Length: 138
Image 1 (cartoon, one colour):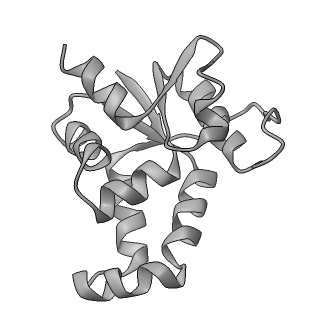
Image 2: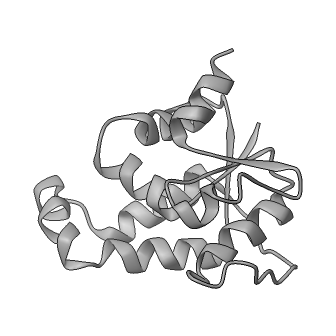
C-alpha cells in the first residue's frame, strides 16, 4: 500500500510509541510503502528544530538531521509535479496532497484536522494512523 504520512505523524512516530510509531514500523517491515517529498522533508527538518524537541533529541543523543535522513531513507522521496492550493488555513498541508498525487497514494495519514476534515482527496482516503493500521491488519 502506497502511503503519504503528514509531518505530524512522522514526528509522533519518531519520538513516541503508539499508532504513528507502528506506522513507521510497518514501513520498516515493508507492509506499506511510505512516500515523501523534498517539501515534506524540509518541513520535518524545520519542525524538529523547534525548541520543544531539543531536550528529546539531546536525551536520544541524535541530531535532527539524522532523523530527517533516516526518514528519507525509509520513505521513497518523489518530486510532485502538481501545485495544489485547496487548504487555505494551513498552506503547508497542500504539500501532503501534492506528494500523495505524485505517489499515486492509496492513503494519506494525518493527525491534522485540516486534512482529516477533507476525508478524501482525489479518491485517496485521509486517515488517522489508527485507521490505517486497522486497514493493513485485515
